[in-house]
Every structure is written in C-alpha cells, then in structure tokens.
Length: 483
Image 1 (cartoon, rainbow, N blue to C red):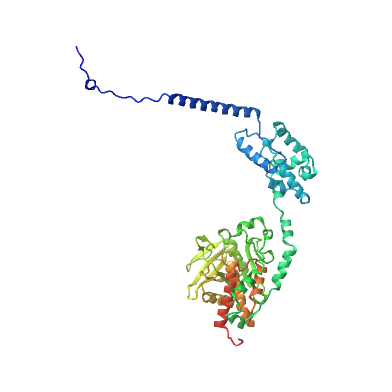
Image 2: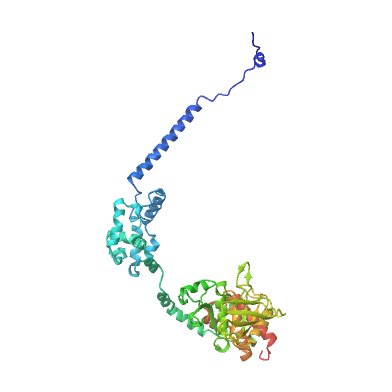
C-alpha cells in the first residue's frame, strides 16, 4: 500500500532551522570558565586570610594615614569573629581625659599612636596581652600624658579611657561631664561681674517731650542701644536639681538663681520675680507658658504668691506649634483641677479692648472646711505674634493700663517668658514712671529686667515697639505742657 505524500513535500517547500554561529559557543564556555576560576580564587584568598588572621598594615608615624587604614580595616574585616577586642577610643574622647598641663603635647602623641594601638592593626599575641597589662597598671599611670611615657605608655594613652576602663561607665561620666561646682565657679567669672556692673550703670532718661519728638528716637539709634545691652542669660549651672531640666519649655532658657521663684514644698518652676517702677520689689512674676507636666506647679505658685492677675500674651498654638498648655476653664461655670488647686470660671468678658478678661476662683484641697478662696483675674491678649511686635500699639495699651492699675503682684507669661513678657513688663514699668515723674528710662528698665531674668525683650523690634507704644501713650493720655 502506498502512503500519500504531504502537500508540503509535493510543493517542494523546505523549513529553515536557525543555527548558532560556530564561534559563540566556545566564547560563552570560555567566559564561564574564567568566572568560575575567579570565584574559586576569591574563596581561596578569603579562607587564607581567615586562617592567617592578617590585618592591613598601619603606619604609626602618620596620623592621617593611620586613620584611613583603620577605616579600611573595619570595612574589610566586617565578618571576623565578634570575640576580637573593640575598636580603639576615638581621638576626641582621648584628648578630653588628658591633664591640662600637657594637652598640647599629649594630643599630638595620641593622634599619631591611635592607629598603631588599634586592635585591627596589632598581632593576635599583642591583643591578648593588652587587657592583662591594663589591669596591672594603676589608673593614674594609664592616663599619664603620652609625652612622659615610653612606647608602652603611649600605646596605653592611645587606648584612652574607654579601652582602659571597659565595663565601667562611672569614670567616663566623670571625665566627660563637668561637675556642678565647676560650672558654678565658671559662671562667677570677672566677665560676669563686668556684665552685671554694665547692666546696673546704663541709663537714658526720656521726658515726655523726648517721646513726642518725631526724630528723637531714630531706628538706627534704638538698634545700637538694644544690642549694646548684654542678654545676661542664666546657665544650666543655676538649675537647682537634675529633674528641673524636664520642666523647662526650652532647654536654653533657665531662670536666674538670685530671683527664681521657689515653691513652698521645694519644687522647681521656671519663673523669676521682676522689679517694677522705682525698683519696687516683686512687682511681676515672669514665667514660661505652662507645660502639661508643670500645670500643678503653676497653680501651686499662683496659690502661694497670691497675685491679683495673670497676664497671658500668647495663643495656645501658633504656626502649628504648641506655645502654652490650656490651664484655665474657657466657659463660665467650668472647673479645672491641677494638683491641689481647683480653678472655677466665674465671669467672662470678651470686651472691645482687644483682650479677654476672666475672673477665676481658686480653692485648695488642703484648706479647712470653712473654705478660703482666692479671686484672680486672667487677662488674655492673643494678637501678639512670637518674636515680633503687635500690629498697633493702640490694641495693647488698654491691657497695659489695666495691669498698671491693679495692686499687688502680677504674673506675666508668653511662651518662653522672655520676649513678649519682657516687652510688656517694660511697657508697664515705663507707663508707671511717666505717670509718677513725667519721665521714663527704657534703657535702664531693659537692663533691670535682664538682671532679674536673663534675655528679657528678645528682639530690637520689640524694643522699638516699646518706644512707639510710649509715644502713643504720651500723645493720647498725658498733657504736653512741657514740650
């Protein structure tokens, strides 16, 4: 039987099959062999180094070259056993534990030997011997300046305090952190005494006619006058206790110790007594805006000092940043309790004078059942941006006049308790001086404020606004007969 042929066979068509060039297969095979050989050589080299324990060579005479080699060694032997000793102490730690008398010579020796003393640049035998040598040498000899020791002494100095006192954090803390007594001695320097003398001597009396003179207070003169006054910031050495740091809204703003308000139970609050017109003692308490952690301390201070009013010069949130914790009730009849003091809102007057007035009644949980309450006014001015001045002095003068008319002590705060607080206290003091004597002294007032609380009136714009507000007060409230 005959099988019929396919149509393709009958038509004579041929199907082509692609064939690789003859040179491609040998090329691919050769490249694969080379890569495999390189991989084998790399594995052999790594195993060889692991077995021998070789390390990069470091030069002990070139500090910069030794530092580069040390960094390269760290990256090259990242997979070595964790049983090796730790890296040598950084040079900045070593220099801080050197005696002052030989700081110049010892720092150079330490930097030149730090690379050579690194565990990555030493033989295994030397790494095993170093801990025993450190235990045998006295601590004083270990930290002796490198210029007074031989090669072994320099190597020990190169290890630094971390290498010689492994497992002990006490000696490191003592070495790197100055003691409170040292900080207090440093604060009482002749420069500080000169600063206080300067603040007590500066003065520039201004009569009503001087304030009304349109060219009497040019901006350039006020700028130079403001920046000629030292800020007189307090330092951290003036903090009474370690836990006081957490109660500061800003770490760099510390109350001056001489005028700091102390709570009856010994607690800490970031607040200072500030003198008023005529050097009247304790006319103001300048403080920061309360934090959530200091609400109880704030109300405890109010209860103990018993002021007639609280002047608040900041909003709760400004530019999406919290400036002050809400510490008072907002609606009539509401009560808030913080610590042992309860505040109840009795009256609320939004008024048309540019500030809100609240009348608060305070009660203390530890008072007798007969009940002794304290009535305090709360005056809230919300139109004063931080680090600047209000848009117009007209809006602030009613609050200042109201504060001047109140008897007793006034508690004034913004956010930090410096810029707006200082400018407002200065305005109240100068208004009282104008009412009593017909003249004021803005420069001397600024100096006394900073003597009581460092950094009061933070910007020259606020100092210029003080003169603008006083000029407006003299123009609208005072007679001009002495012009």
